[in-house]
Every structure is written in C-alpha cells, then in structure tokens.
Amino acid sequence: MKIAFVIGTRPEIIKMSPLIDEVKHRGINYILVHTGQHYDHEMSQQFFTDLELEKPHYNIGVGSGAHGEQTSMMISRIEEVLLEEKPDLVLVEGDTNAVLAGALVAAKLHIPVGHVEAGLRSYDKTMPEEINRMVADVCTQLFFVPTLTTATNLLLEGVSPKNIFITGNTVVDACQRNLKIARKHSNLAGEIDPRANVLTLTLHRAENVDHPWRLSQIVNSLLELDDLTIIFPVHPRTAKNLHKFGLYRKLDEAPHVQIIKPMGYLEFLLLLSESHLVMTDSGGIQEEAITLNLPCITLRYNTERPETVEAGGNILVGTTQKKIVNSIRNILSDEDLYRSMKEASNPYGDGTASKKIVDIISEIESRGELKIEAPDFITGVTTTKLISVDQDINVSKFEDKYRGIVKIVFEDGKIIFPEPGLNLKDKLVLISGTEL
Ligand code: UD1
Ligand code: UDP
Image (cartoon, rainbow, N blue to C red; front, side):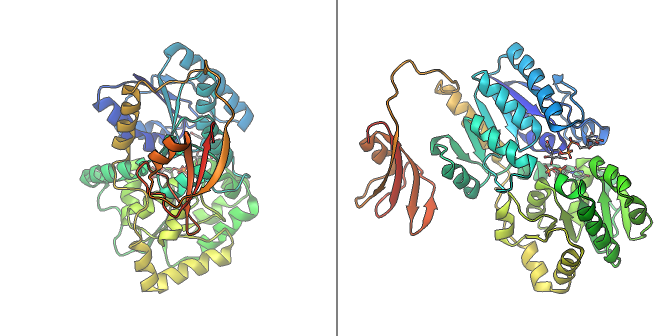
C-alpha cells in the first residue's frame, strides 16, 4: 500500500504529523506532497523541524494568490504527481485549498480519498473553508471524523455510516506528544512571567482580517484591555492588513501588547500552556485550548467546532469591541466561570486518533477494499424508507432483512449513530436499498 499525504499550510503539517509518524512506524510506503501554500520559514519549514518530519517528496510551490489561481495550480500539479506515483489512498486534512484540490484530483483519478477531520460544518458558506470541507466530503470515501456531532453532520448529508469512523482529532495526539517535548526543551522555559495575566491572541481568518471595521474593533479591544499582557504572534495575512489599514503602529506602541512573528509549534504550545486565556479565530487553537484546559474566547460568529462551546470551554464573542472586552472582563472576574471553562472536558479524544486511523486504513486494505471500481452489474434503483421498528433486531440483521443500509436512527427526537450492534427496537430507522 502506498499513501499520499497532501498538505499545504501550518495546521495541516501539525495535524498530519502524528499520522505520518504512525505510517512510517508501521513501515507503510508513503509520499508527502506539499502544495507550498505556506512557504515562509516560520509558516512551513519551522514545523518540519519541530515535528522532526522529513522534507516533502514534492513541493509544488503554488505560493500565495487568489483562490482560483492558487487552487487551479494545485489541481494541475497534484494531478501530475498522483499520475506518476499511483498511490492507493490520498489523505487530506481539514479545510484548506489543499484539501479541496487533493480530494478533487484523487476522486477524478479514482483514487480513494481519506479525509481526516471530515464532517465539520459552520453552516456559513461565506467561509472559503466551508466550501472546501463540503466539496472535499463529496469526493471522500473514508471519513475520519473527530466526534459524534461531526458524524451526524455527514449522516444528514446522506453519507453512509459504513464509511464514517469516529476517531477523535489528531490535534490531541500532536498536542500531547509535543508539549512533553517542548517542556524538556530547556531554552524555551522560563520566558513567561507566571505572575502576568497572559492572554495569547491569534488572528488570521479572512472574514476578520480582510475587513477593516472588524479588524479595527479587535485592535481597539486589545488597546482597552491594558491590564493584561497580550502576546500576539501575527500571521502574515494579518500583519499585511494591520499595516494596510493603518492599525499596526497603534498596537506596536501599546506597552502591554507584544507583537511577534509566528511561533514554532513547540514554543507556541508552551506559550498556550502557560497562558491564562487564549483569544483566537483559529480552528486548531479552539481544539488545542480545550485539550490544554485553557479557556478560549473565539472571535467569530459561528464555529465548526460547536463541541467546544457545548462543553463549556469556548465562548463565541464575535468581533465588536464592547462584546470582546465585556466577555473577557466577565471571565476574569468570575472565578467559577473561569474554573468551569478550564475544566471543560475534551471532546476530541485521548490522543490515539492517528493509531485508530491507520488501523482502519490497514484493515480496509487487507480486505482488498481500498479501491474504486466502476460497477459491471445493474445496480438497481435505490429507494429510501422510514420504518418504525417494534421488534428486537440490531442494525446488521435489519440490513440483511431489508437488503439495505441503515442511514440514520432516531430515538426520542435524537439521532443515534447506527453501529452494527445497535438494537433498533422502538426506534425510527431511515434505510436505503434497492429492494425495499
Ligand atoms: C490558509 C487557509 C486557512 C487556514 C490558514 C492556516 C485556505 C483558503 N485558507 O489561510 O483555512 O486556516 O491557512 O494558517 O486554504 N502569506 C505569507 N507567507 C506565507 C503564507 C501566506 O506572507 O507563507 C501571506 C500572503 O500575503 C497571502 C496571505 O498571507 O496572500 C494569505 O495566505 P493564504 O495561504 O492564501 O491563506 P491563509 O490566510 O494563510
Ligand atoms: N500555531 C503555531 N504558532 C503560532 C500560531 C499557531 O504553531 O504562532 C499552531 C497552533 O498551535 C495550531 C495551528 O498553528 O496547531 C493553527 O493554525 P492556524 O490558526 O493558522 O490555522 P487553523 O487551525 O485556523 O486552520
């Protein structure tokens, strides 16, 4: 078996790293394809160094550009690589343009796609990431989802539960493993004053930083929060726009705000672990915060990580100065609220997602099912029915009886994931098949 990993940006390098390690450890053949969407040393190479990853086999160097320009270049170059390398599986992670391009090319070449962190939905199609997630999931065969909530999103879009695997998120694997390494790294220790109320800030989402009013509201809130120490490793997109909108100097001159370059992963994990709060519009950092028991304030109006909000570790505050400042003051003045945010339980698993994913891939491959073949028999016409079940029968037996696939199970108004052994008595079952 040969696996092609397609990555392009900082978070993909981080979240794919435990999977690459696992594949390597098991002696599975693989290639690493970097689209080159992130190319600055501190947005790309630094993570290969920190995570001890070898150089990508291909760096197709697309660089920055408009969506069409960047994605079309990725599509044509990834296609060349996949035609040359003929992998048995393409793995993509998350929701960047690399995910859209990698999944689309592989699907058209009839190479199975495994989407790591599949099924996330913000239900906000103005986000480029939402389009990427949705298109990638149309092209995906193996959906490695972090939680039951994300699995449910896919069930509701008609994905067969047979192809959905709830594994947790590899961010936990990466975070746990690398924080230990970071703590051992002597030259990183002791740089943060433990007495300071440190708020770490990251910001890069297009809908915030390309928007002058929103960005200035966020900057004004930082200026107002002058009793905190704010550490702000600035993403290049944000740095560019802070300059463009005349906001950089204001922040730079504020003594309580430290604007610094994007940090390496080890250094950043250490900073998070020693911070009092994190404020962000990042996807990955919402997940890392709850993993590290760090209260998180999210500068967005929606999130594809609702589990963090439901668990109580994350609050969506939007981007107005008043709401941001009030929320932070509220969390800092209410010890019970702060403690409950810190103690929120992590919905993203126990750090074994990468092992689970490679186990699943290996098992499917050993059954000879890691392939896409055009049917050479008349498939029949698929119909879907809702059936109320009044007998003791599990999902597998029910599927045999009706020669179909149980797509969704409802009980008392709730959706239940149709595991093969689930007893269907007194439940409503949505089943699809050709002989119903
Ligand atoms: C991309 C992803 C986003 C992800 C983020 C992670 C898409 C559509 N967006 O956003 O989902 O959350 O990465 O950080 O795929 N730039 C540099 N140096 C670099 C990279 C970028 O200077 O190494 C600057 C360029 O001016 C570029 C801008 O940042 O135009 C935006 O970069 P781009 O890769 O297009 O999007 P991100 O905002 O990084
Ligand atoms: N990160 C980092 N250094 C930084 C800022 C972030 O190593 O200065 C890491 C962070 O730990 C997380 C990932 O980058 O794992 C998140 O990337 P980003 O916020 O750019 O993208 P998103 O997760 O929103 O797609």
